[in-house]
Image (cartoon, rainbow over all chains, first blue to last red; front, side, top):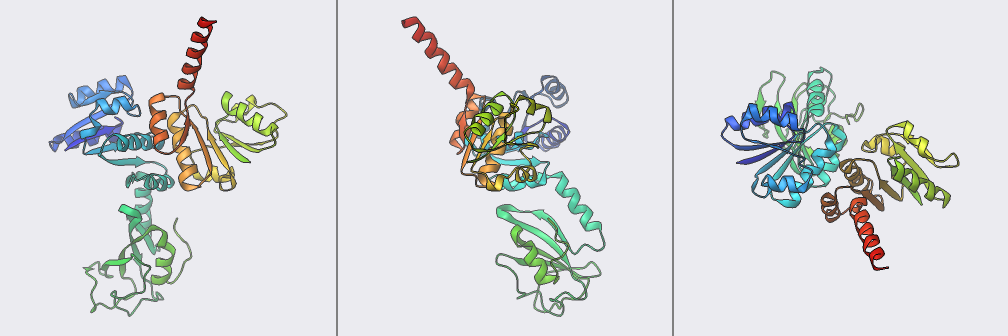
Length: 224
Length: 136
């Protein structure tokens, strides 16, 4: 695979190192000339010094034949523009690093489906660690879908029911049940849900509050 | 018309003052409060210290009620990103985006944003002045 990494900061550097080790063809584009030279010494020939937001630089990097373009600078707007220009010139799939989790929506609206947010990842990790958290977004998937985990309590309306045929919003499915002993189970007719079970669901982002209401029975303390 | 202008540089301030004089409802935002010094004392619009790429800031500035959004900060990418926010998320009817890099301007325009490049326009105007003067 040919991968173009835009942004030679820490994220870009370690990504490049790992990908080169895995025998991928990698090119790092870095705006800062001094930093680009540093990277050149550390990584070998696979560094281009230039501003990837300039169409001519991306073209010179061979964006037309790239399989993936990873925009991992520290600025959301720069990553956004890199992905937009890359999509304009070639068929490379863009992956963007975002810092402000709110920005996810505008990336998705523009067809940049894959975004990675360290902020969101850490927040989600914190939520999983909190004992009282009943609703944890685990990860965003393509097309506005996401994976969420819901922890049942003693008054959850689904207790005593089978995970098959639960009343859920459209395009939502129970993917997995993790019982109170931490045993994962594939949903089946035989399972009877009980308090302290966790349900892993695939659903749409906009269905969060409805899913929560149907499964946990409360729409209070809504996560963003 | 309710207009939000992002960036209180020379251009932003000039647009804000002219529209304000013309009785439009103007809100000008800049992340640096010092930039508002460029506005004439008579300016009756709203000044908001905010980052135009932050959705909460844009909402504070009244983006949900805005008829127009004009992005004229120093950064082409910032202008484009904020313009797409205004257009895609807030469905603002008229969105104008300044892009200094002529190459990028062409691409952004084809990606659906109304753009203006002072570089291209300036060059065209000066060439016309030069050749026009030569002829006279």
